[in-house]
Image (tube, rainbow, N blue to C red; front, top):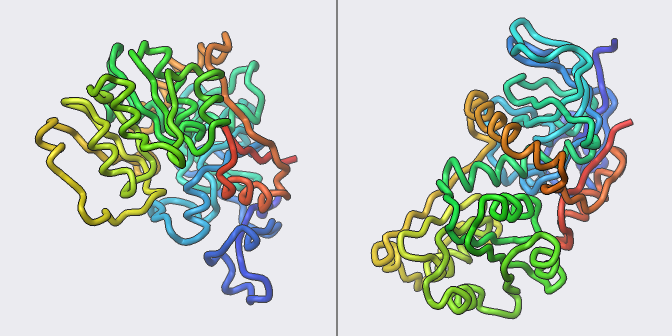
Length: 346
């Protein structure tokens, strides 16, 4: 077994090798076949990667706009599927060499091999393809964490998922239905995406943020009450709308800032105390392995059985070959997708 592997790196063409792994656009990505293969330590396993999923944070990290945890690999990618190649000194019981697994990582999934804590691995069921398994860990874990560990969702509550056709919200809509939400609303940028969320995933209604005042529409749909929980990835530009659309004692969980981090002038904060709102931020990547292990167990116990009977589904927009990672990033940048973008390694 050699000491190097292929992995996605990035650089600007014609810049010396010593300056590679800088920040750039999608065209800066390339396959480097001389990357040192990671070595598992302590509770880690070395996994030979079969497929990996793309996430919005990958684009931000590529552009130098995402603060990665100190223990994270410089290689992009946080979710993957593959087979266990070897172990470190003290791996978690229940795994063996050759096991088919999928899981989360702090980074490093855009590669032939990844070294990751066994606390962050799940056995891959036979009914899931490598592509499906690679598209589950980050999105379904993020949705699970936002709804339950942070948002404390309970059956009978209403919920609004922004970016309804994003992979996290696709997971969240399904979780909301399974846990008997009283109503599930979404925002999206096209009627096609709204129809997908309503007709295929079972959302109650959706609002086109290009054509409608979505917060006003939420209030109309709820007879002025608002929604009990809002899961937001947009940030500053939706801050006021979230306050307006939230119900009394509502809970707003913020997971991103695609719409900026600086609040616009004239924001009316009175709804905070008038409605007794909670506005809470969260991230998954910065959590320690023990926390992610608990989240893994929750996902395995509650979601995996529903994938087997197909009451839950992993929606995949497109599968690319490893060598087509540039095209995969450009597709994600287009904001025209519904579901996961996956790359496979042969």
